[in-house]
Structures are given as C-alpha cells and as structure tokens.
Length: 282
Image (tube, rainbow, N blue to C red):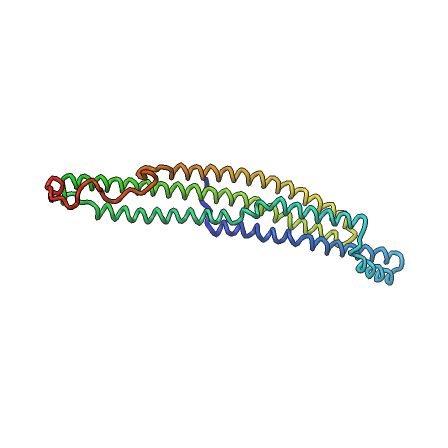
C-alpha cells in the first residue's frame, strides 16, 4: 500500500466528484437550450434560403415560437440524450452514496493514532513511577508486580490494536481515493467533450455530428460508470477484509480477559494485614 492520503487530498478528489455530479445534473437543461438554438438556426437557414434576409428573420422567429414542439429527428434525439444523462446519474448513484465514508474512515484512523500516543504516555509514566523495586518486597510486592506486568502487557496490546485499526481504516480510505480519482478523471474529459458536442448541435448545420458525438460520449461514460460499480464492489470487499482484521485484532486480545481491561491492583492479599511475610520494606 502506498502512502496514506491526507484529509486534504481525499476532500479534494471527493469535492471534484461532487462538483462534477452537479454539472451532469445541469446537462438536461443545456441539452434543451442547445437543441432550441439548433431549431432556431435551422429555421432561419431554411427561411433564408427561400426568402432571403427577410425570410431568415421570419424563419428564426418561427423556430423560436415552435422550439418546444419539435418533432422528428431533433426531438427524438434530444429525448434520447436526456434519458442517457439520467441513466448516467443512476449508474453513479452508488458512488454518490459513498462520498462521506472515506473521510470518516481517515479521520477515525487518525484518532486511533492519537489514542496510541496517549497510551504510550501512560505507559511511560507507569514504567517510571510505578516500579517499587528496591523499596518493597514480600508476597504482596510480588502480587503487585504481577498486576503491574499485566497492565504493561495490556498497554502494549492496546497500542498494537491502535496500529491495526489505523492501518485498516487508512487502507479503506486509500481504496476510496483510488476509486474516485479514476472517476473524476473520466468525467472531466467527458464534460469537456460533451460541451463541444452540444456546441455543434446549437449551430444547426453541424447538429447531426454533434448529436452523434453526444450519444457516443454518453454510451462510453455509462459503460465506464458500470465498470466503476464493479470496482466499488472490489473496494467494498477490501473494506470487509479490513473490518475482519479489526475484529480479529480486538477479539480476546492479549491482556484483555473477557475483553476487559485488567484491574490495576491485586485483590489477592489483605491490604490491612500485619503479616510481615506480605509486607517487607527493603
């Protein structure tokens, strides 16, 4: 696995994707606009060819009045393109639904590293200040030492768990970054090329070429979106594997008997005992 992506890197790619989805949602209105412009341009051209300059003006006015009632070639292909845009949005819906999870995973992974640091601080304090070697001997001292040793082992385990949780959650986040990075690159190219196709449509003269380009571009990006879904499935499988690692790391971990933190003292001796065998100063 490569270097873990930062929150900024992850937010950047997710932000790009969100913006692109919003742009795609505006495309049906753009399609309407460009096809209407095509109808006006074609009507103007038709009128101009018959009646000259005056005919062109009349044709343009006629096209403007009837642009919402287009039939035949323009109308059919306009609706086809709009339907394909809707299909594209539907194919991308799973990716839209998963937008927030990667950031949450990465933020949580960082929280586990912070917790590891806190545990390390506590462990260092205990090692420096918790040792009574050279001051206390006897049975009680041995039992205290046993409890203290268990605490230390449990803190080692806890830090190891923090590492595993951080690693696993970061892996999920990195998979998401890889996934969305491919999508935003493809959609960015699509939006540029689709805008060019709509520009051709608006001219009227090049409308057939623009329509053909628009349909081909949508077919390609829809196919890619289907592939994205398959890759998302792979990412979810990887997520499940990492969740299994987390479960394994936290299930009856060393020092956590019955999944509980051990008590910090021993109850195996009587603190009020006057028996010198239990309490011996050295």
